[in-house]
Image (cartoon, rainbow, N blue to C red):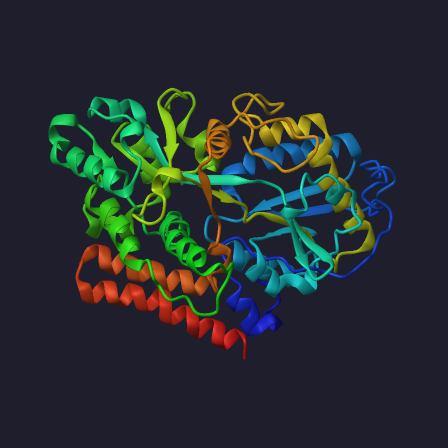
Length: 457
Protein backbone atom coordinates (compact mmCIF):
# COMPACT_ATOMS: atom_id res chain seq x y z
CA UNK A 1 0.00 0.00 0.00
CA UNK A 2 2.05 2.78 -0.85
CA UNK A 3 1.18 5.21 -3.29
CA UNK A 4 2.30 8.35 -4.62
CA UNK A 5 4.57 10.29 -2.34
CA UNK A 6 1.73 12.73 -1.90
CA UNK A 7 -0.02 10.23 0.30
CA UNK A 8 2.36 11.39 2.98
CA UNK A 9 1.84 10.24 6.51
CA UNK A 10 -1.25 8.21 5.82
CA UNK A 11 0.58 6.13 3.28
CA UNK A 12 3.48 5.56 5.59
CA UNK A 13 1.11 4.46 8.27
CA UNK A 14 -0.68 1.96 6.14
CA UNK A 15 2.37 0.00 5.17
CA UNK A 16 0.82 -3.15 6.43
CA UNK A 17 2.52 -6.23 5.02
CA UNK A 18 0.18 -6.70 2.13
CA UNK A 19 -1.03 -3.34 1.23
CA UNK A 20 -4.33 -1.91 1.82
CA UNK A 21 -6.64 -0.89 -0.81
CA UNK A 22 -9.16 1.70 -0.37
CA UNK A 23 -12.55 1.90 -1.61
CA UNK A 24 -12.67 3.79 -4.85
CA UNK A 25 -15.29 5.70 -6.51
CA UNK A 26 -14.43 5.77 -10.15
CA UNK A 27 -16.89 4.26 -12.53
CA UNK A 28 -15.09 4.20 -15.85
CA UNK A 29 -16.31 1.35 -17.96
CA UNK A 30 -19.86 0.25 -17.45
CA UNK A 31 -19.45 -2.89 -19.54
CA UNK A 32 -18.53 -5.78 -17.30
CA UNK A 33 -19.48 -3.72 -14.25
CA UNK A 34 -23.08 -4.78 -14.52
CA UNK A 35 -25.06 -5.62 -11.42
CA UNK A 36 -24.30 -8.89 -9.72
CA UNK A 37 -27.27 -10.56 -11.37
CA UNK A 38 -26.21 -9.52 -14.84
CA UNK A 39 -23.91 -11.67 -16.95
CA UNK A 40 -20.30 -10.60 -17.04
CA UNK A 41 -18.77 -9.36 -20.22
CA UNK A 42 -17.02 -12.11 -22.12
CA UNK A 43 -13.33 -11.94 -21.39
CA UNK A 44 -11.52 -10.30 -24.22
CA UNK A 45 -14.68 -9.65 -26.21
CA UNK A 46 -13.85 -6.42 -27.91
CA UNK A 47 -11.68 -5.24 -25.02
CA UNK A 48 -8.79 -3.13 -26.26
CA UNK A 49 -7.17 -2.57 -22.90
CA UNK A 50 -4.45 -4.43 -21.03
CA UNK A 51 -3.81 -5.74 -17.52
CA UNK A 52 -0.88 -5.08 -15.20
CA UNK A 53 -1.08 -7.15 -12.00
CA UNK A 54 1.33 -6.32 -9.18
CA UNK A 55 1.38 -9.61 -7.28
CA UNK A 56 2.08 -9.77 -3.55
CA UNK A 57 2.86 -13.48 -3.30
CA UNK A 58 6.31 -14.51 -4.56
CA UNK A 59 5.54 -18.16 -3.85
CA UNK A 60 2.87 -18.08 -6.57
CA UNK A 61 4.76 -16.08 -9.20
CA UNK A 62 5.23 -19.01 -11.60
CA UNK A 63 1.54 -19.85 -11.58
CA UNK A 64 0.46 -16.27 -12.23
CA UNK A 65 2.93 -15.93 -15.08
CA UNK A 66 1.52 -19.08 -16.68
CA UNK A 67 -2.10 -17.98 -16.22
CA UNK A 68 -1.29 -14.59 -17.74
CA UNK A 69 0.16 -16.27 -20.85
CA UNK A 70 -2.86 -18.56 -21.18
CA UNK A 71 -5.30 -15.68 -20.89
CA UNK A 72 -3.44 -13.63 -23.47
CA UNK A 73 -3.36 -16.58 -25.86
CA UNK A 74 -7.11 -17.11 -25.45
CA UNK A 75 -8.23 -13.49 -25.62
CA UNK A 76 -5.45 -11.45 -27.16
CA UNK A 77 -5.50 -9.15 -24.11
CA UNK A 78 -1.98 -8.42 -22.82
CA UNK A 79 -1.52 -9.38 -19.16
CA UNK A 80 1.68 -8.43 -17.35
CA UNK A 81 2.38 -9.90 -13.92
CA UNK A 82 5.11 -8.37 -11.78
CA UNK A 83 5.82 -9.96 -8.41
CA UNK A 84 7.35 -8.09 -5.51
CA UNK A 85 10.06 -9.81 -3.49
CA UNK A 86 9.10 -10.81 0.04
CA UNK A 87 8.78 -7.81 2.30
CA UNK A 88 8.97 -5.23 -0.50
CA UNK A 89 5.39 -4.96 -1.71
CA UNK A 90 4.63 -1.66 -0.05
CA UNK A 91 7.69 0.03 -1.46
CA UNK A 92 7.16 -1.40 -4.91
CA UNK A 93 3.48 -0.49 -5.04
CA UNK A 94 4.25 3.10 -4.13
CA UNK A 95 6.92 3.28 -6.80
CA UNK A 96 4.84 1.61 -9.51
CA UNK A 97 1.72 3.67 -8.83
CA UNK A 98 3.71 6.84 -9.43
CA UNK A 99 4.45 5.76 -13.01
CA UNK A 100 2.43 6.42 -16.13
CA UNK A 101 2.13 2.67 -16.68
CA UNK A 102 0.81 1.94 -13.20
CA UNK A 103 -0.66 -1.41 -12.09
CA UNK A 104 -4.29 -1.85 -13.02
CA UNK A 105 -4.70 -4.64 -10.46
CA UNK A 106 -3.06 -4.63 -7.06
CA UNK A 107 -3.53 -5.86 -3.51
CA UNK A 108 -4.18 -4.47 -0.06
CA UNK A 109 -4.23 -6.24 3.28
CA UNK A 110 -7.31 -4.84 4.95
CA UNK A 111 -8.69 -1.72 6.63
CA UNK A 112 -5.37 -0.05 7.48
CA UNK A 113 -4.09 -0.48 3.97
CA UNK A 114 -7.41 0.63 2.61
CA UNK A 115 -7.00 3.88 4.44
CA UNK A 116 -3.96 4.67 2.27
CA UNK A 117 -5.21 3.42 -1.05
CA UNK A 118 -8.93 4.21 -1.03
CA UNK A 119 -8.48 7.07 -3.47
CA UNK A 120 -7.06 4.63 -6.02
CA UNK A 121 -9.61 1.85 -5.72
CA UNK A 122 -12.33 1.35 -8.30
CA UNK A 123 -15.76 0.58 -6.83
CA UNK A 124 -16.32 -3.13 -7.47
CA UNK A 125 -19.85 -3.21 -6.06
CA UNK A 126 -21.42 -3.50 -9.50
CA UNK A 127 -18.88 -5.90 -10.96
CA UNK A 128 -19.47 -9.46 -12.04
CA UNK A 129 -16.51 -10.46 -9.82
CA UNK A 130 -18.32 -9.18 -6.74
CA UNK A 131 -21.34 -11.23 -7.73
CA UNK A 132 -19.21 -14.39 -7.60
CA UNK A 133 -18.33 -14.02 -3.90
CA UNK A 134 -19.84 -16.67 -1.64
CA UNK A 135 -20.23 -14.13 1.16
CA UNK A 136 -20.18 -10.38 1.55
CA UNK A 137 -17.78 -10.98 4.44
CA UNK A 138 -15.01 -11.25 1.84
CA UNK A 139 -15.60 -7.75 0.48
CA UNK A 140 -13.43 -4.92 1.79
CA UNK A 141 -15.67 -1.87 1.94
CA UNK A 142 -15.21 1.86 2.01
CA UNK A 143 -18.63 3.10 3.01
CA UNK A 144 -21.07 1.74 0.45
CA UNK A 145 -18.33 1.01 -2.06
CA UNK A 146 -16.49 -2.28 -2.48
CA UNK A 147 -12.83 -1.30 -2.55
CA UNK A 148 -11.36 -4.79 -2.57
CA UNK A 149 -12.31 -8.44 -2.84
CA UNK A 150 -10.55 -11.23 -0.94
CA UNK A 151 -9.34 -13.81 -3.40
CA UNK A 152 -7.88 -16.37 -1.00
CA UNK A 153 -8.67 -17.55 2.51
CA UNK A 154 -5.64 -18.89 4.34
CA UNK A 155 -4.68 -20.45 7.64
CA UNK A 156 -1.47 -20.55 9.57
CA UNK A 157 -0.17 -22.30 12.64
CA UNK A 158 2.72 -24.60 13.43
CA UNK A 159 3.43 -27.09 10.66
CA UNK A 160 4.49 -30.40 12.19
CA UNK A 161 6.63 -33.21 10.80
CA UNK A 162 4.61 -35.85 12.58
CA UNK A 163 6.97 -38.61 11.44
CA UNK A 164 9.79 -36.99 13.44
CA UNK A 165 7.39 -36.23 16.28
CA UNK A 166 6.55 -39.92 16.51
CA UNK A 167 10.24 -40.78 16.52
CA UNK A 168 10.52 -38.55 19.56
CA UNK A 169 7.71 -40.53 21.21
CA UNK A 170 4.78 -38.17 20.69
CA UNK A 171 1.78 -37.52 18.47
CA UNK A 172 -0.06 -34.28 17.77
CA UNK A 173 -2.78 -35.46 20.17
CA UNK A 174 -0.23 -34.93 22.94
CA UNK A 175 -0.09 -31.21 22.12
CA UNK A 176 -3.29 -29.44 23.10
CA UNK A 177 -1.90 -26.37 24.89
CA UNK A 178 1.15 -24.16 25.28
CA UNK A 179 2.28 -26.19 28.29
CA UNK A 180 2.08 -29.36 26.19
CA UNK A 181 4.04 -27.77 23.35
CA UNK A 182 6.69 -26.50 25.76
CA UNK A 183 7.10 -29.89 27.40
CA UNK A 184 7.48 -31.68 24.06
CA UNK A 185 9.85 -29.08 22.57
CA UNK A 186 12.10 -28.99 25.61
CA UNK A 187 12.23 -32.78 25.78
CA UNK A 188 13.28 -32.92 22.13
CA UNK A 189 15.96 -30.33 22.84
CA UNK A 190 17.25 -32.36 25.80
CA UNK A 191 17.55 -35.41 23.50
CA UNK A 192 18.64 -33.51 20.39
CA UNK A 193 21.92 -35.38 19.91
CA UNK A 194 20.24 -38.73 20.45
CA UNK A 195 17.31 -37.97 18.13
CA UNK A 196 19.31 -36.22 15.41
CA UNK A 197 16.90 -33.29 15.03
CA UNK A 198 15.72 -30.14 16.81
CA UNK A 199 12.29 -29.01 17.93
CA UNK A 200 11.91 -25.82 15.87
CA UNK A 201 13.34 -24.51 12.62
CA UNK A 202 15.33 -21.29 12.79
CA UNK A 203 13.23 -18.18 13.35
CA UNK A 204 15.02 -16.11 10.74
CA UNK A 205 14.83 -12.37 11.25
CA UNK A 206 15.78 -11.16 7.78
CA UNK A 207 13.05 -9.62 5.64
CA UNK A 208 12.16 -12.92 3.95
CA UNK A 209 11.22 -14.50 7.27
CA UNK A 210 10.71 -11.98 10.08
CA UNK A 211 7.07 -11.32 9.07
CA UNK A 212 6.27 -14.70 10.59
CA UNK A 213 6.98 -13.30 14.04
CA UNK A 214 6.56 -9.52 13.93
CA UNK A 215 3.23 -9.98 12.15
CA UNK A 216 1.78 -13.49 12.30
CA UNK A 217 2.98 -14.47 15.77
CA UNK A 218 2.21 -10.98 17.06
CA UNK A 219 -1.39 -11.53 15.92
CA UNK A 220 -2.00 -13.83 18.89
CA UNK A 221 -1.63 -11.31 21.74
CA UNK A 222 -3.63 -8.81 19.69
CA UNK A 223 -6.40 -11.33 19.04
CA UNK A 224 -6.82 -12.28 22.69
CA UNK A 225 -6.81 -8.65 23.83
CA UNK A 226 -9.47 -7.83 21.24
CA UNK A 227 -11.49 -10.84 22.38
CA UNK A 228 -11.40 -9.66 25.98
CA UNK A 229 -12.60 -6.20 25.01
CA UNK A 230 -15.07 -7.23 22.32
CA UNK A 231 -13.39 -4.99 19.73
CA UNK A 232 -11.90 -5.45 16.28
CA UNK A 233 -9.38 -2.62 16.32
CA UNK A 234 -7.84 -0.06 18.64
CA UNK A 235 -5.77 3.10 18.56
CA UNK A 236 -4.00 2.05 21.77
CA UNK A 237 -3.07 -1.59 22.37
CA UNK A 238 -2.46 -2.39 26.04
CA UNK A 239 -0.24 -5.44 25.55
CA UNK A 240 -2.19 -7.57 28.01
CA UNK A 241 -0.72 -10.79 26.64
CA UNK A 242 2.83 -9.76 25.81
CA UNK A 243 4.23 -12.04 28.54
CA UNK A 244 2.65 -14.88 26.60
CA UNK A 245 4.21 -13.52 23.41
CA UNK A 246 7.57 -13.64 25.17
CA UNK A 247 6.99 -17.22 26.29
CA UNK A 248 6.26 -18.55 22.79
CA UNK A 249 9.14 -16.54 21.30
CA UNK A 250 11.50 -17.96 23.96
CA UNK A 251 10.28 -21.44 23.12
CA UNK A 252 10.92 -20.96 19.40
CA UNK A 253 14.40 -19.49 19.68
CA UNK A 254 15.79 -21.61 22.52
CA UNK A 255 14.74 -24.97 21.08
CA UNK A 256 15.77 -24.52 17.47
CA UNK A 257 18.33 -25.58 14.90
CA UNK A 258 20.59 -22.61 15.61
CA UNK A 259 21.78 -20.34 18.37
CA UNK A 260 19.40 -17.38 18.95
CA UNK A 261 22.24 -14.94 18.25
CA UNK A 262 22.37 -16.23 14.66
CA UNK A 263 18.79 -15.37 13.76
CA UNK A 264 19.47 -12.10 11.96
CA UNK A 265 21.42 -14.07 9.34
CA UNK A 266 18.78 -16.77 8.90
CA UNK A 267 16.28 -16.65 6.02
CA UNK A 268 12.94 -18.13 5.02
CA UNK A 269 14.79 -20.59 2.79
CA UNK A 270 16.87 -21.74 5.73
CA UNK A 271 13.74 -22.55 7.71
CA UNK A 272 11.98 -24.46 4.95
CA UNK A 273 15.14 -26.39 4.08
CA UNK A 274 15.64 -27.34 7.72
CA UNK A 275 12.07 -28.58 7.86
CA UNK A 276 12.01 -30.54 4.61
CA UNK A 277 15.41 -32.14 5.31
CA UNK A 278 14.26 -33.47 8.67
CA UNK A 279 16.28 -31.18 10.91
CA UNK A 280 13.28 -29.92 12.90
CA UNK A 281 9.82 -31.03 13.97
CA UNK A 282 8.03 -27.67 14.12
CA UNK A 283 7.86 -24.85 11.60
CA UNK A 284 5.57 -21.84 11.98
CA UNK A 285 3.99 -21.02 8.64
CA UNK A 286 0.74 -21.25 6.72
CA UNK A 287 -1.35 -23.12 4.20
CA UNK A 288 0.39 -21.17 1.41
CA UNK A 289 3.59 -23.03 2.27
CA UNK A 290 2.16 -26.44 1.39
CA UNK A 291 3.83 -26.67 -2.01
CA UNK A 292 7.20 -25.78 -0.48
CA UNK A 293 7.14 -28.55 2.11
CA UNK A 294 5.33 -31.37 0.27
CA UNK A 295 6.33 -32.86 -3.06
CA UNK A 296 9.13 -34.62 -4.85
CA UNK A 297 12.34 -34.35 -2.87
CA UNK A 298 10.45 -32.90 0.09
CA UNK A 299 8.02 -34.41 2.57
CA UNK A 300 4.85 -36.40 1.92
CA UNK A 301 1.27 -35.59 2.87
CA UNK A 302 1.51 -38.34 5.48
CA UNK A 303 4.47 -36.61 7.11
CA UNK A 304 2.89 -33.23 7.75
CA UNK A 305 0.03 -31.67 9.62
CA UNK A 306 -0.62 -28.35 11.35
CA UNK A 307 -1.48 -27.43 14.92
CA UNK A 308 -2.62 -24.09 16.41
CA UNK A 309 -0.12 -21.63 17.82
CA UNK A 310 -0.72 -21.92 21.53
CA UNK A 311 0.46 -19.09 23.79
CA UNK A 312 -1.21 -20.11 27.05
CA UNK A 313 -4.34 -17.98 26.76
CA UNK A 314 -8.02 -18.81 26.38
CA UNK A 315 -9.72 -22.15 25.77
CA UNK A 316 -6.75 -23.86 24.14
CA UNK A 317 -8.50 -27.22 23.88
CA UNK A 318 -10.96 -25.59 21.49
CA UNK A 319 -8.60 -23.23 19.66
CA UNK A 320 -8.30 -23.54 15.91
CA UNK A 321 -5.82 -22.27 13.35
CA UNK A 322 -5.31 -18.58 12.55
CA UNK A 323 -7.63 -18.13 9.59
CA UNK A 324 -8.48 -15.13 7.44
CA UNK A 325 -7.31 -13.07 4.50
CA UNK A 326 -4.98 -10.16 3.92
CA UNK A 327 -5.17 -10.57 0.18
CA UNK A 328 -7.71 -8.23 -1.39
CA UNK A 329 -7.72 -7.59 -5.11
CA UNK A 330 -8.23 -3.96 -6.06
CA UNK A 331 -8.56 -2.24 -9.42
CA UNK A 332 -6.81 1.06 -10.07
CA UNK A 333 -9.60 3.53 -10.81
CA UNK A 334 -7.07 5.93 -12.35
CA UNK A 335 -6.32 3.52 -15.18
CA UNK A 336 -7.99 4.08 -18.54
CA UNK A 337 -11.55 2.84 -19.00
CA UNK A 338 -10.26 0.20 -21.42
CA UNK A 339 -7.67 -1.08 -18.96
CA UNK A 340 -10.18 -1.14 -16.12
CA UNK A 341 -12.53 -3.21 -18.23
CA UNK A 342 -9.75 -5.55 -19.30
CA UNK A 343 -8.76 -5.99 -15.67
CA UNK A 344 -12.33 -6.69 -14.53
CA UNK A 345 -12.65 -9.29 -17.29
CA UNK A 346 -9.36 -10.96 -16.29
CA UNK A 347 -10.34 -11.13 -12.63
CA UNK A 348 -13.71 -12.63 -13.50
CA UNK A 349 -12.01 -15.21 -15.71
CA UNK A 350 -9.69 -16.16 -12.85
CA UNK A 351 -12.63 -17.16 -10.63
CA UNK A 352 -14.94 -18.74 -13.21
CA UNK A 353 -12.78 -20.38 -15.90
CA UNK A 354 -12.13 -24.10 -15.34
CA UNK A 355 -8.39 -23.89 -16.10
CA UNK A 356 -7.90 -20.83 -13.91
CA UNK A 357 -9.88 -22.34 -11.05
CA UNK A 358 -7.83 -25.52 -11.21
CA UNK A 359 -4.65 -23.46 -11.16
CA UNK A 360 -5.80 -21.49 -8.12
CA UNK A 361 -7.14 -24.38 -6.07
CA UNK A 362 -5.19 -27.41 -7.27
CA UNK A 363 -1.96 -28.91 -6.01
CA UNK A 364 0.60 -31.11 -7.73
CA UNK A 365 0.14 -31.17 -11.52
CA UNK A 366 -2.73 -28.67 -11.48
CA UNK A 367 -1.15 -26.22 -13.93
CA UNK A 368 -1.52 -26.84 -17.67
CA UNK A 369 2.28 -27.05 -17.80
CA UNK A 370 2.20 -29.89 -15.27
CA UNK A 371 3.49 -27.75 -12.43
CA UNK A 372 1.88 -27.43 -9.04
CA UNK A 373 -1.12 -25.16 -8.63
CA UNK A 374 -1.57 -22.51 -5.95
CA UNK A 375 -3.63 -24.83 -3.69
CA UNK A 376 -5.74 -21.90 -2.45
CA UNK A 377 -9.10 -21.92 -0.77
CA UNK A 378 -10.96 -19.20 -2.64
CA UNK A 379 -14.33 -17.61 -1.71
CA UNK A 380 -16.05 -17.81 -5.09
CA UNK A 381 -19.18 -19.70 -6.17
CA UNK A 382 -17.59 -21.74 -8.96
CA UNK A 383 -14.55 -22.80 -6.94
CA UNK A 384 -13.86 -26.47 -6.32
CA UNK A 385 -12.54 -27.50 -2.93
CA UNK A 386 -8.87 -26.79 -2.46
CA UNK A 387 -6.55 -29.77 -2.72
CA UNK A 388 -4.48 -28.31 0.10
CA UNK A 389 -4.71 -30.60 3.17
CA UNK A 390 -3.96 -27.67 5.49
CA UNK A 391 -7.10 -25.99 4.16
CA UNK A 392 -9.09 -29.18 4.75
CA UNK A 393 -7.66 -29.42 8.25
CA UNK A 394 -8.85 -25.92 9.09
CA UNK A 395 -12.34 -26.78 7.83
CA UNK A 396 -12.37 -29.97 9.89
CA UNK A 397 -11.25 -28.18 13.03
CA UNK A 398 -14.01 -25.63 12.59
CA UNK A 399 -16.57 -28.39 11.98
CA UNK A 400 -15.35 -30.05 15.19
CA UNK A 401 -16.19 -26.91 17.14
CA UNK A 402 -12.74 -25.34 17.40
CA UNK A 403 -12.72 -21.56 17.10
CA UNK A 404 -10.45 -20.11 14.41
CA UNK A 405 -8.19 -17.26 15.52
CA UNK A 406 -9.04 -14.26 13.35
CA UNK A 407 -6.45 -12.21 11.50
CA UNK A 408 -6.14 -8.98 13.45
CA UNK A 409 -2.66 -8.02 12.29
CA UNK A 410 -4.28 -6.04 9.51
CA UNK A 411 -4.99 -3.45 12.24
CA UNK A 412 -1.29 -2.97 13.00
CA UNK A 413 -0.56 0.71 12.42
CA UNK A 414 2.13 0.44 9.75
CA UNK A 415 4.96 -1.49 8.18
CA UNK A 416 7.36 0.70 10.12
CA UNK A 417 5.70 -0.42 13.35
CA UNK A 418 6.36 -4.02 12.37
CA UNK A 419 9.97 -3.28 11.44
CA UNK A 420 10.68 -1.66 14.81
CA UNK A 421 9.09 -4.62 16.57
CA UNK A 422 11.10 -7.07 14.47
CA UNK A 423 14.35 -5.31 15.30
CA UNK A 424 13.52 -5.40 19.01
CA UNK A 425 12.72 -9.11 18.81
CA UNK A 426 16.07 -9.80 17.14
CA UNK A 427 17.99 -7.82 19.78
CA UNK A 428 16.17 -9.68 22.53
CA UNK A 429 16.87 -13.05 20.91
CA UNK A 430 20.60 -12.39 20.98
CA UNK A 431 20.53 -11.20 24.61
CA UNK A 432 17.45 -12.36 26.49
CA UNK A 433 17.35 -9.82 29.31
CA UNK A 434 14.33 -8.20 30.89
CA UNK A 435 15.59 -4.83 29.70
CA UNK A 436 15.65 -6.01 26.10
CA UNK A 437 12.16 -7.46 26.45
CA UNK A 438 11.00 -4.12 27.83
CA UNK A 439 12.16 -2.67 24.52
CA UNK A 440 9.96 -5.20 22.71
CA UNK A 441 7.00 -4.15 24.84
CA UNK A 442 7.70 -0.49 24.10
CA UNK A 443 7.93 -1.23 20.38
CA UNK A 444 4.59 -3.01 20.58
CA UNK A 445 2.59 -0.71 22.85
CA UNK A 446 4.16 2.75 22.76
CA UNK A 447 4.83 2.78 19.02
CA UNK A 448 1.28 1.55 18.33
CA UNK A 449 -0.22 4.51 20.21
CA UNK A 450 2.26 6.99 18.74
CA UNK A 451 1.64 5.96 15.14
CA UNK A 452 -2.12 6.01 15.49
CA UNK A 453 -1.95 9.39 17.19
CA UNK A 454 0.06 10.79 14.27
CA UNK A 455 -2.32 9.24 11.76
CA UNK A 456 -5.33 10.71 13.49
CA UNK A 457 -3.78 14.15 13.53
